[in-house]
Length: 160
Ligand SMILES: [Zn+2]
Image 1 (tube, helix red, strand yellow):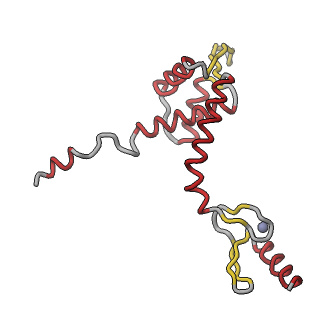
Image 2 (tube, helix red, strand yellow):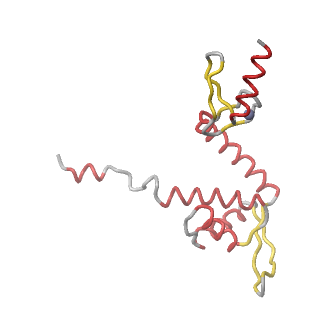
């Protein structure tokens, strides 16, 4: 068996490669615009600081142009320092587009996130990780903190 042939069958696009990150960066650009108007440079520095990767103008500007073409984004000129910059913002239909996209995304990821969610048996607040667990009356219960566990046990004793 020729191992070179096997290698050829591997898809050329790596899952952790630039293509996936490009789509993710585009999604992130939409969340930035959703927060409010931004100029291109602001978008690039936000990507860099929050996603920890260099954002190239070749990623940001063509995407902004594409969004403009769909009527999702509009811009106005604004002076920043001594420079004129284009401040991009979402149009009402761009906002509606994001609302749809974000709810799809939420549906997609909630299944992955929810199993790690626990609810404090005492106060009902959501605990993402490291819930404080304690066995009370033979049942292991999750709490947000030991004070809630103590209050719960006290109330159980008072009730029983
Ligand atoms: Zn609690």
